[in-house]
Image: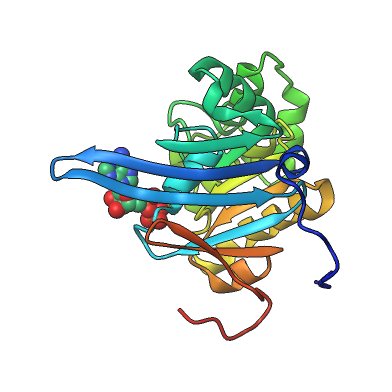
Length: 248
Ligand SMILES: Nc1ncnc2c1ncn2[C@@H]1O[C@H](COP(=O)(O)OP(=O)(O)O)[C@@H](O)[C@H]1O
Ligand SMILES: [Mg+2]
């Protein structure tokens, strides 16, 4: 990516208006049996619309916690998060759920499909929750992930890769502006995982869907516009994500 050295840093207010995700002073602590544990400490993050951002970090570094906060699934202990200009930390549970339904898709490492629903019922759920049932759209996204023929199958009748494709279809059926994916290929073999990541990048490329991807896969990370690393609850940005030699 070309560097524009002449660019002035954007004033805070302006940046907040243009970023699709903006977090500052973000912290998360939990109280456990041995006292308070700080999971995330004073993070700052700005993501522009249409960007793809990879978050890498050792197991336990806080990646899942961070994604949950950015997606509005959980509330931070300190700091603010704006999604498309709306301050998540000022919304109640119901308003946050509505914002998520309108704006966000989420893919989990372990698929999180409802076992008692068929593929098409799982995919249709976000539309149903948003009050816009649309069987044709469900068929369309299932076909896009190559599973039209499996639409009546239950999760237990599908392979891991197929289940994750259903989960991916469910995540983008509402055409979300932001897609969060938490190690979406972590439970899949390389070839199957490759199909999932290709689909994620295609959504980013073709629809401008902002992609925030947690991964252990350095190669996957380097394909994103930006590569961030979490270390002990703090966030670092790699200066040159396209370099091949990245220290572990
Ligand atoms: N609700 C919780 N209560 C206590 N500890 C938690 C909770 N959620 C996460 N943690 C701890 O916070 C750290 C970061 O967890 P997590 O965000 O899942 O990391 P990662 O996804 O990078 O593996 C871990 O040490 C984990 O045990
Ligand atoms: Mg995790």
